[in-house]
Length: 382
Ligand code: ADP
Ligand code: MG
Image 1: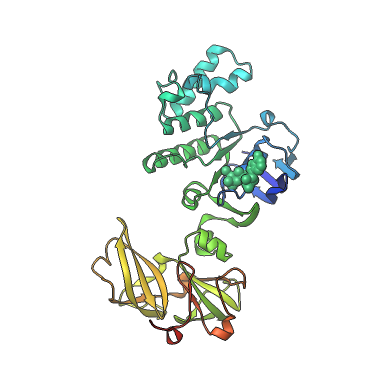
Image 2 (image 1 turned 90 degrees about the vertical axis):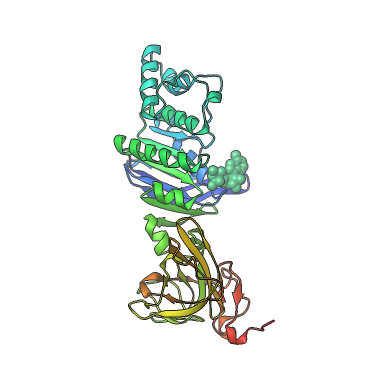
């Protein structure tokens, strides 16, 4: 169980700053996700923690000790690469035992330990197969076994589920979390997929452009995003431009009460997640509701997603099962907007697609795809 602290960690490649002053505490024995779009510096950060790359600035501390200059093989941290990098000409068993060979462990003991770890990752009996004779999922497990045999304190996983089919992903996720708990490993998972970050980790560090953007429990990112960028990255499909006055936000949908402490103002995006809109004739307990017209709806297997237009704003609405199956386009629908389902993020002049000053235009609204529409009474109808 190793506490990790990154302090102002920076890495440049020529003129590219891949990682820009990352300061982050990673609790011992926890799973933390480094999340962000491709190219935001995740793999670079992981290699810096592993000691496989020298930083241009900043420090890596394990349990309070500066390990920035400690070579990779003496850090107790092992990285599993996204492309697993197995030796194609070695059997699975020899791939797994390779690290022990480097440490001078005798052959028979290596073999025994490799077989035990292979069994732990669900590959018993496959020690003699070569990587080409294993499926992608099995290769991923060999790569994990190769890391675990080194008895690391810190496990660093680069996109561990990215190359797996949906049904293999669940098994791999469980395996990772089981071994993490068994061995009390401090685990850092790199992923570009917010769902993967949420199911794997108890803590998410969201990176954009090499910088830490938001850090906290997974739930926070869905319910309390700090910025528009976070809200969009976490699939907040509904962003409606508005102006805040105290605990109310004036929007084309009406004047809506929002919870205390929501960020931003006076110009904000009102956000509401598709699954938090309440569909039906019973208005929300606090009476906040709007009437809209269904534009389209589609049954997606476990839920139905509908687009509903309210006062010129298109809202994305998710309901469980097929409750909206027979609500066709053109139908009227009552949508509850309970205050606790609402949130705001700052609307900056440059961040949102606002062509004119909000005051000049009056309330403006943005639909899920970010297009801005003026209120219905000012719209020029075709
Ligand atoms: P991620 O893992 O989030 O996709 P990376 O850490 O791989 O991002 O890369 C971050 C940035 O650094 C990218 O712009 C990438 O092109 C650049 N980069 C990464 N490795 C190198 C390298 N060896 N040489 C030059 N640029 C690199
Ligand atoms: Mg990467």
